[in-house]
Amino acid sequence: MRRSLSIALSAACLLASPAARAGAAQDAAQAPTPLDAQLFGDIRFRYEHARDGGRPLDASAATLRLRAGLEVSLEDGLTGLAEFEGAEAFVDAYDDLIGPPENRAVVADPAFAELNRLYVRMSPLKGASITVGRQYLSLDDERFIGRVAFRQNDQTLDAVRLEAALPLGLDVEAAYIWSVNRILSDRNPNGRFRGDSAVINASLRTPVGRIAGFYYALDLETGPRTAPDASASSKTVGVRWEGRSAAFDPAVLRWEGSYARQTEFADAPLPYAADYWLGAASAEIGRLTFGGRFELLGRGGARAFQTPLATLHAFQGAADVFLTTPSEGVRETALRIDWRAGEIGPFTSVAAFASGHQFKDASGTRLFGREMNAGLKGSFRGVGLAVKVARYEASSFGEDVRRIWLSAERAF
Image 1 (cartoon, rainbow, N blue to C red):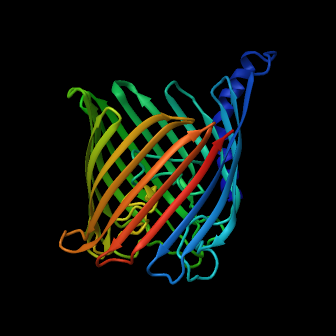
Image 2: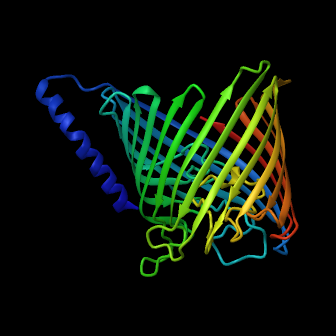
Image 3: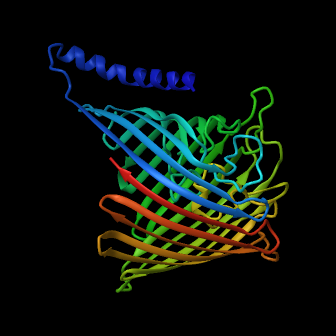
């Protein structure tokens, strides 16, 4: 990690130094550039209870996460950020995937303390920026690459990233990634992906919505360097379309659709070619939103479509049964209703949701199981409060799973 960060900071200095020398030559007596420094952070407590039919004992986890950082900005467009993050488990009757295998259900919130982000960002041109170092990367709906913000430990990338807003509504984001710091933390032997990955996402804003194309070449290796496991490596090429329309007053319609093709990449041991399909739509009427979703992660040869860098908890049910796509692939059909209540007594930003999910294999002939999710959240005097439940009923895949979360969070 230290070597990667050293390389990143050195690269940032090399990129910035020509402009700095030019400014110094122009006016050696110029006053120091004004400096803007800002401290920030947040604290989050969460209790999670889990029951997994595949484990003999229930899990109980009470964890407290603290995150604090400093951002420093200069008028010439140069920004630096350092952020530390750590969590402690006050109730640790759960399998955190770090110690020896336990008989209790898994809760992927281990105790940890680590450098969360450390980067330098510069803006050499208007509408363009380069970020070098440890950072977040969230693309589109985070179905392929996200920061996994639900868990106590964020997913961050050691990377060089370019962002550019070009004429005619074209936006481009590209990154070279040499390390992925996963939510499992460095205490887990598989808590980091190494490799040389490249991602490109280009989108065009049009009158009928945002149309994006993406190319994700992920070289992901875990385990010892002498015998790395590269089974998570893949190359994904696809398109996405999302938009909204208020033409059907009083309803506001939203939609999204995507197709992608995934094949083996780098040192992936098995050849395969699998497809991904997504179609979703919703209608917002007043404080209510009704929506439906169809998603297919297909199977092609020896392997099914995988998304190891996604914000996985946000997809295919909150019970986290399908974090890894089964070898048969998986198709999901889901319905959801959201209610934005607003202010209720001393509580503000009150909102609730309920959703139902059905899971089958990619061919649609075998029922894996069904799941119900529900949640309620709001804010009380600056503290965000939330409760969420998930219930998966297995038919032919996995075991019955129950999960409940209670959380309180405040930024400072």
